[in-house]
Length: 325
Image 1: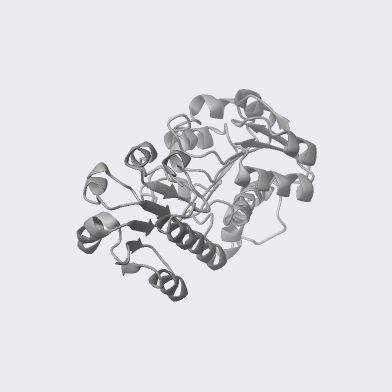
Image 2: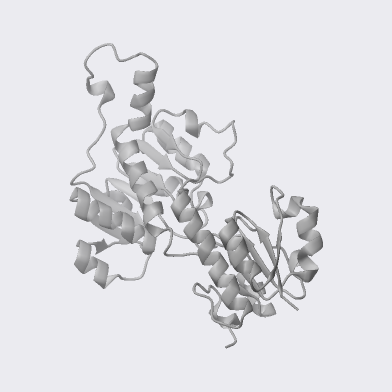
């Protein structure tokens, strides 16, 4: 009898056919798994689960006694109780590597857009306000040659720093990470305690994962340490930053501008002032949102779940402790 895989997320016809060669596949189309009766009804039969934006609850796990592996179509897994999965012997797989460069492109696009006021001044032209040569009221700030402070220096953080150092002559500082001697040699990066980095850098970019330690890592005290000319960019998770404190810092001029792809609540509430502030570039969490990258992420999830359910080690395994060769 074929094992059963429950799919909640976008897979191509080719990817579904690949799974169908070895497994019984059921695709659920509800807005979220919790709102999809077919998904919940299928849990008792599921050996594998593929999805994006999954929030796994103990009740789900209790309802899925046959579950062997979960493949999330993402790098992050903050909605998934890893320790509980490990305790139950359920493998968790994610999709690092395949989205690194695309997400770094998004991060650096926000650095450029916020520094050079790209969105604000595009709106200025669109409204018909460009009636004479621009003056100081429309000036932005340079990116080339500035000091880039990376809070988090994993794959994505290093890729952004590489763009800055090698493409824009930027001096790179990093914190909230273990020492990275290879990157220090490659990029001339210097490790700093976070307070020192906040005081020294011209542009701050956050790429840490969301954990109990990093939730609300950046708040009023941290914004007060930044240069008033500083640019703040967050492509990590919204809850790494106290959003109300960021809004206050922007309003008071403690931070000159922000580029944001993530927010404490997503989708962003229409009542939020952030997208209406002229010194904010707000994007709808598009870090990895290209067709090529999303297809590659889905393919990694397919490969992970296929290997896991056939007794092979997945390519990208989060909870190594649960692996039993």
